[in-house]
Length: 56
Image 1: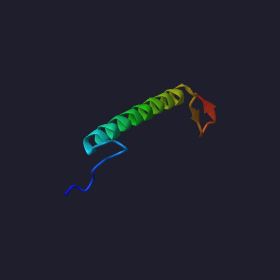
Image 2 (image 1 turned 60 degrees about the horizontal axis):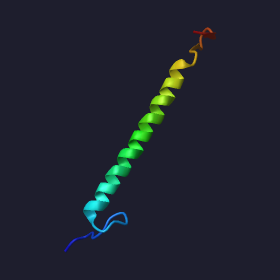
Image 3 (image 1 turned 30 degrees about the vertical axis):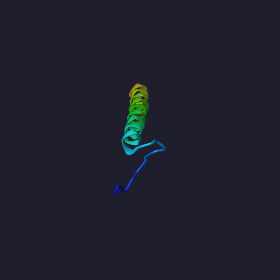
């Protein structure tokens, strides 16, 4: 007896699992894109030496 018969509004567990995998891949790709753009913005900002209060 199977515990699950369907997954994520799909007809069977296999199709639902593939749908979850595709969603996870898209979400992770979007996260990496946002993280990299944020890191790029931080690398372009001037660095401040807090001891001397000078901008490098």
